[in-house]
Length: 66
Picture 1: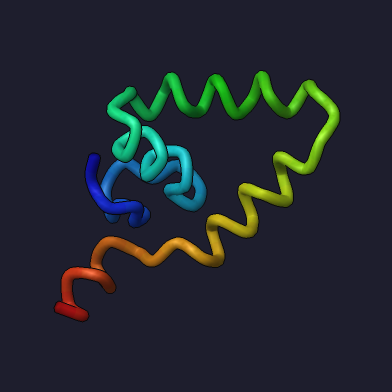
Picture 2: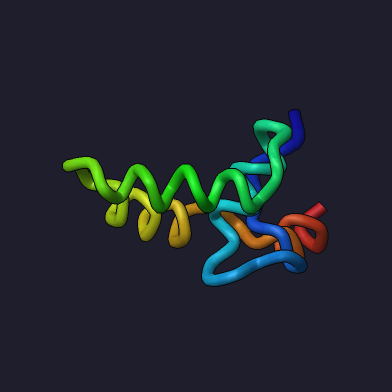
């Protein structure tokens, strides 16, 4: 598993689904579909997405930090 950082390429909105897809070894499209289907269920999915967008570092920032 790779580190959890939002990629610079392949983002649609914030790159959260792309980062989670890379982390768990699935495609970004699959992760986006899972997220959209989960939004039909009750719960704080949208707020979790916003929190991950704010908390996950961008991939370009993690590269320059090392």
